Image 1 (tube, rainbow, N blue to C red):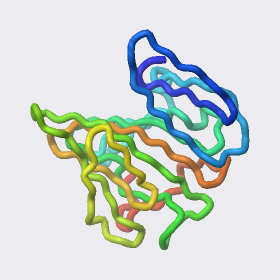
Image 2: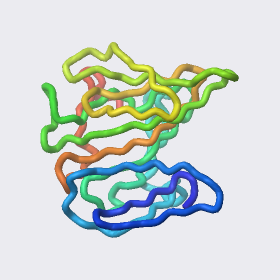
Image 3: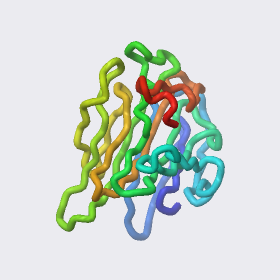
Length: 202
């Protein structure tokens, strides 16, 4: 495996990972799954330039990014969707427009909802500075006017809120996202709700 590669491990499967040097491994798990699928490997290099690498943000250059769908229709899975997003420019706005796909609120998706975690990596041009991004924390029905500071290597659950991410001008941002559908077998990306006024921003 190389940097950015993914190994999907189905329920009741066991694997062993070893290395002759050292590496970081991020583990994400969708719980309450009942259908068994085999172990499946996905190489990041196979997704690059392919259909599962979406280039987004043409309407707003500040939101220009590439979304790599590493666990999608290419992988048999119960609830899991997984990938990473690389911003094209420093100081970019990720996951734009602000959107929501949780179960609650006036536009909640109920059983068709998806829970999601973002895991951030960010670097700054300023030597000795601690890079961070601003994460939208508006609940459904609220105006988008409150953001939380999230620092490099931190993760945040974005399920309850509209989410978009703003990086300061000096910060280069990417994030890994792990999404899991509330209903097993219902892995539909299209079911989201944009913040009112942002409907035509995709």
